[in-house]
Length: 126
Image (spheres, rainbow, N blue to C red):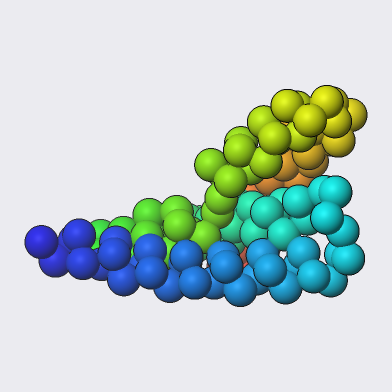
């Protein structure tokens, strides 16, 4: 039960942060045609999961903290389901080029952000 509470607490924090940061990024973009907010939180989430997973592995943090950070906080912070829904909406509205840009941006920038997060953690943990 304690593990589920750790995930729930992390999930609550991650969901609130997703709402705040995604809205902030979307407002900064002044765009209603491209989901910059979702892209931003997904890339930031990828960076953070790369960073934290590497650090957690190195210092051997307990399972509860891993559940709280990786599954709870970052799992609810990243928004793959929102990304998928927004992409389907773009496709249904015949905005195929924007949908393809969105897909490629999430995949390429997400993988790059995980890699960069791992590299930052490696540099900090020398």
